Length: 193
Image 1 (cartoon, helix red, strand yellow):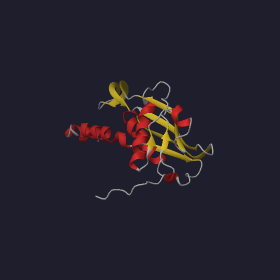
Image 2: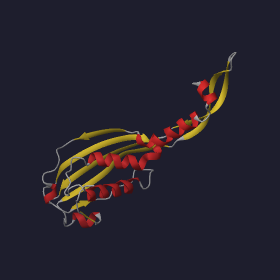
Image 3: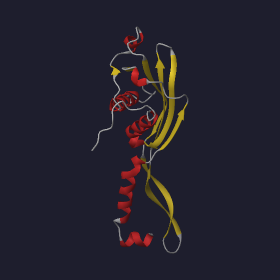
Image 4: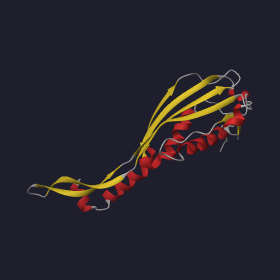
């Protein structure tokens, strides 16, 4: 490998560029479905969606997930109320109320720092200080609950966690929501190309 790098100095930067490009595509997802999907949700339109509170120390984290949630439900053909919490709950204007809660949100940013590595110079090992890139990480754990306001009961609940690179936190939130909402059937037929 060292010989290849000496003959072709462009190989290492190319490999590094590929690693950075695909870093946002790698993630780990865990889902926990606690109760079955709701009964005939499509018959009870519109759905009220409460805003998702931001995670402590991460302003905008809840609003980003809330906007992605609205976009995903709209793409499935669902209508939802544009109201604040007080107007939705008293008196109820929608039968179903969708509640989101961030259970965990942590971000470790990427960084570069010098580290010493043993390098063989042909006669002996000597330590050299080289810049080393450390990939940051993001972990999001989210709980979604669908409340039937008439029965005052939770009819659907799903929880999931996703882990991946810190620079892809917006994409990670979207992927997590897509998987959490996968069991909710679309009301509209998918567009044909």
